[in-house]
Image (cartoon, rainbow, N blue to C red; front, side):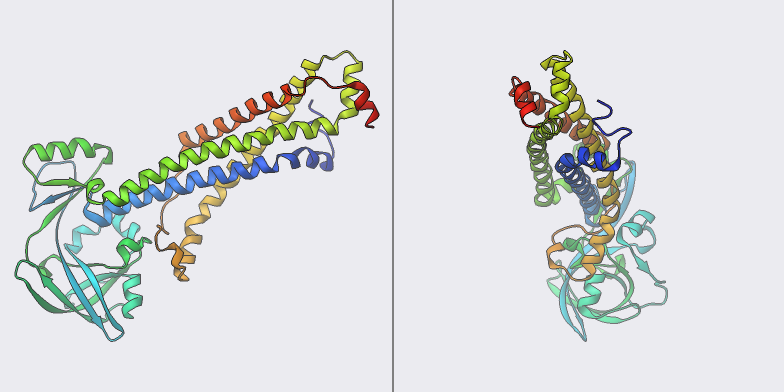
Length: 372
């Protein structure tokens, strides 16, 4: 059996052993890479919704409590911006620059920031806004702020002191940070929990205390529900693809049996039973399938490391198809999900192989000898 799986054999023979399993390797690579990619992007989008949206929890009004979280006071307003290159609507977010832009936010935003001292109305815009309005650091442009509480518009002259690129068009196409004092009207409070798993407990406690609190899952329900649906559908597709890949195991075994027809005849003549021969080819085939699955897993892990860089480069080239996706995120390795996926793939392959070989009830020695 060791010789049949290629041990101590020439490279050409080893290639003949591996080549029938290339389809299993390809499917393993696609399944593992897709799982890593989708779950990493989903986690990245959730983090974006928290950090660039309204935190884990948004509370209407000013909140000063003892919740275990970072607390930020924010004002917001709609506006229309003007530069020499054109105009576009902006969503203004008034924050305290010194405290709001934590190290995690700066990293997430890929924020390039210059000093805002002695600058008229410093603002931070996205790379997409800067490109659309043809703005760069220290450039000035006009913003017409709509003050809803006073039902009027107020113009200001703003100066670009920072440019960010979160990689998520949903925010990058309109979100502009301005000083808290630049906006009038009511404010709300963003709460970013130290432990995101405490969301439900904290939200329930705040609501029970009389605060008008809402979680990001509700605030961005269409996006969040779409993420959950995508992941659910993804798991279903993975199971179907794993079932499909399992049928290749039977074909691999048949190719080995056809290749080893003379050896099988000699095994029969030496007294080995049909059951023993089938068991041997199950072990041979599963050894190759396990190797193919492991190689596919390793390749998917290596390739996934370069994916965010590739997506970011394509996004900068202006590929419109990427506008609906997050193009900048950290790769996470979902170990439990990967283990479950590959165990199912191997289990389905074993069951398929057992059923396929059971269909070959007997092997005629005379037919084998006559085929040589």
